[in-house]
Amino acid sequence: MIHEQSLQRDWFSKPGDSVLSLMERRNLSAVDVSASLDGGIETLRGLVSGSVRIDGKLADELASVLGGTPGFWLRRQSGYEEALERVVSAVVSGHFVEWLERVPIPGSTGRARMTEGEKRSAVRQRLAFFNVNGPDAWARRYASTSETRFRTSNSFSSSEGATTTWLRLGELEASLIQTGCWDPDALRTLVPEIRTLTSISQPARFLPRLRAMLGSVGVALSVVRAPDGCRASGAARMLSPTKAMVLMSFRHRSDDHFWFTLFHELGHLLLHAGATFVDGEGTTADEHEREANEFARDCIIPASRRAEFEVLRPDRTAVLRFSVSVGIAAGIIVGQMQHSGMIPYDRLNTLKRRWNWDDIREALP
Image (cartoon, rainbow, N blue to C red; front, side, top):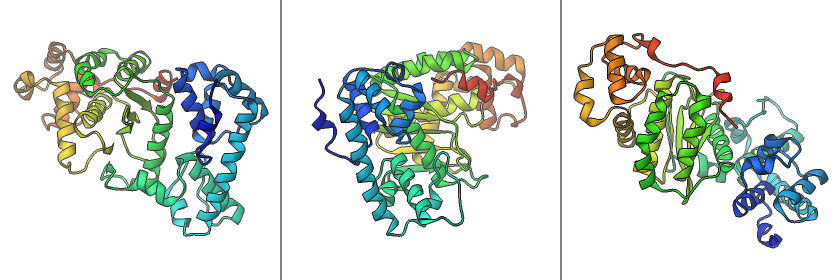
């Protein structure tokens, strides 16, 4: 039996937060819960993001799989909506237009002029999606340079708003991933085993195994395609003291870029836990970025083989032999050679594995 009062103290918290709390309490996975919902995993995602409203049918389904009464879930929805409307009124009465322009959300479109009703709807959608009670709260969590370190490509005009939207999508996806308790020592020990997955060519085969490995040490691996305007490749963030997130965009859809980015983000978690890092490419690295780069480089090429790598002949046979000897995919070695200036970026690219989004989607739940 659940104690309904403990789940309804903060009415501004979405009903989806209660769903997540009960899933954790009952050790239910997203697959377990979504199997009982009309609409499956998309309905569950909508509850967590705030885009799906609980009606009578859904209340019955939630009561059946999570507990509580249908009436509890309906009251939870109505209480949240009332609290949300009060916050919307407060935001609309202030200076919020610039915030709307900065912060796109999935499904939103930019409009030069909006009616009052459209303004309220746009504000409501963003408050629900980001789970904040106003622009200031959004800025504290997603736009504060003291909390979030953005590093995106100099060659693109990257939108901060689009990047925070991508980060939030990753958080929502991570909230549905069951993990153990965050254990940095166990993660360090796991790195050599993670490294062996680079030999697997298809995301549908290596991503589920990678997600399970990381989940066992308290890291939720989220894969979210970057929205327009977001040029990020990866992100690392502590979601709670017991759960970390690594978010990947598969931006370049090649094995060298994916695996270097993954090890880079793991480096941030191990070396700089507490801050949020959103990483792209092309900027001058600060000390945190240099340390994460060094961590990723050492994951790919052990320090004991670094000297041999630095004099590696730039031909296919030599690269293949070296990659086999160090137990890493040849394309990743090529990426390191290109990044180090040993060969131009147009050399040996046939050794890299490349994927399309159909390949990637096949690996996602």
